[in-house]
Every structure is written in structure tokens, then in C-alpha cells.
Image (cartoon, rainbow, N blue to C red):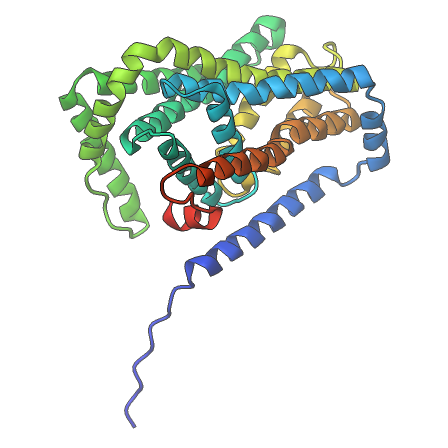
Amino acid sequence: MSEQPATPRRRPPPRARRIVQVVLSLLLVVGIFYYLLRGIDLATVWAEIQALSWLELATLAAIAGWNLCTYAWVWMSVTPGLSFWRAMGMTQATTAVANTIPAGVGAALGIGMTYTMLGSWGYSRSRTTTAVLVSGVWNSFIKLGLPVLALALVALQGGAAGGRVVAALLGIAGLAAAVVVFALMLRSEELARRFGLLAGRVASRLLRLVRRPPVEGWELATVKFRTRTVGLVQRRWVAITVTSLVSHLSLYLVLLVTLRHVGVSDAEVSWAQVLAVFAFARLATAIPLTPGGAGFVEAVLIGGLVAAGGARPQVVAAVLVYRALTWLLPIPVGVGTYLWWRRRSLGAPGPQAPTLVGLGSGG
């Protein structure tokens, strides 16, 4: 009797994979929060939150509103001619998607929405691509630079432990290397091509270790990136740097004020220590396993602030309020701005605005 040929195993469809990713992401978030909150009297944490006065709540609401506005200013700096309200609507809508859909899918959908919304206002795909790339590069530079700055400030306040000094030096070296590579890429087309070839070779060797095919065309991508970026950076690098830095520091201000209002004093956790913990928590948002870094950010903030000297119930209360203002609040705001944009797009002449489902399939 002849042996039947083995039928090839079919890959699960994209929708099934996404459902599995979402479920696993939610389970991961639940597991992290269970670990963080075990052994804590949640009634005490809730009492700390309820103790906030109306003046303190109003102050936090004002700072949180300011923080939301800074996202728009960053995009206005990388997209000349974009108005504040359009930038505000786009950034809040894409942030809402990124904060609710996990496993990297939210980021992809957000980029797709960026192209669609800017395209509805007359911006070409090439201009949008340049804005996405430049804002992403500057965001990465500041995420790398903030831990270095924070550790240096902690050291100046007398907390210069050997491990912190080494971490600061490594951070400075990494940031300097990234800036130098970026500057050299912009300097000439030939240098951009060489960096693309080198990066492609390194990536291919790493992929070979996991039996994946080599990458191709990275030198073409770096040359195209340089061509699109050099003009914008030459004209607007100051505005891009200032708005990006203000956006990050505004987020830090929300955390600092929340801690002080809840009762974590400067004597317990100094402003420089808060900045250091905040900076490393920002790096945790790069982990694409949960929406908006949910769970990972809270773990870094709570663990770091408690280790720095903060009382655990107060720190947990402050972190929960902070995340409600910076992770949860943009979701309903973003839904509202998306509906506003969609209503205006449907009322305008031209093709019908795509739905979120269409954006997902096309992004």
C-alpha cells in the first residue's frame, strides 16, 4: 500500500493570527498587572486617588491637555503647512489605534491612517513618508538621549553609583554613534548607499542564524531616505528638535506632577530620579507586544519609583492616574477626532473615506 503524501500545513489566515495576537497580548497585560498589584491593598491605592483635591485634578487635566497638544506640534514641524487642528485630529486618531491594538498591528494601522488622513488634505505619499521617517528618527534620538541626561542629573545630585556611570557612558556612546551615522547618511548619496549595504550585510548574517533569507535593496532604501529627508532636515531641524523634546518633557511633567499631588515628595524621589525612571519607561514603549506598552510601562515605573524610595501604595496610585491621563485619555479623544475627520471627508467631493477595516487591510 503506497504511502499517502503528507499534506502541507496551511498557515492560519491573517485574521486568525491577529485574533491570537490580541488574545495573547491581553493575557500578557493581565499577567503583568496581577504580578504588579499582588500583595497591595487596592483600597489604600483607591483612597490615595480619592484624596486628590479638585484643584489638583484640574491641574492634572490642564497638563494632560497640554501634553496632547504637543503631539500636534511635532507633526506640524515635519509637515509644513499642516494646521494645528488637522495635526491634532490625526495624531489623536492614530494614537488611539496604537493604544488599543497590540502586537505591532496598531502601529501599522496608525501609519496607514496617517497616509490616508494626510492624503485627504492633499499631501502626497512621498511627503508623508518623509514626515513619518523624520519624526520617527527624532523620536528615537530623544528616547535614547533622555536616559543619558537623566542619569547624568542623578549623578550630579550625588547618586553617581558605578553602574549608573557605566550606563550613562554607554548611552552617550550609543547616542553619539546614532547621530554620527545619521549625519553621514545625509552628507552624501554615496555614504548613504554604503551604510545601506553595510546594514544589509549585518542584517543578513543575523537572519542566517535563524535560517531566514537575506535582505535585499537596503542601499536603495537608504539613498531614497536621504533624498527625501535632507531638504526637510536642513530647513526645519531646530523646530523638529524643539517640538519633539517639548513633547517628551510634557509627558514627564504629567508623571512628576501626578506623583507630587499623590504625596510622593522630592525628598523621597527627586525630580531627576523621576526623569530617569520615566526615560527608561519610554524605552519600554518600543516593545510591540502590548498596545501602548501597557503592562511593561507600568512595571518599569512602579518598580523604578519604589526602588528610588517612593511608598508603594502612593506610587501605584500615581502611576495609574498618570497612565489614565496619557494612555487611556487619548483613546476616546482619538475616536472623536477620527469621526470628525471621517464626517468631513465624506462630505467633501472625491472618493469615499476608508473605514478602519479598510485601513487595516491596506496598511
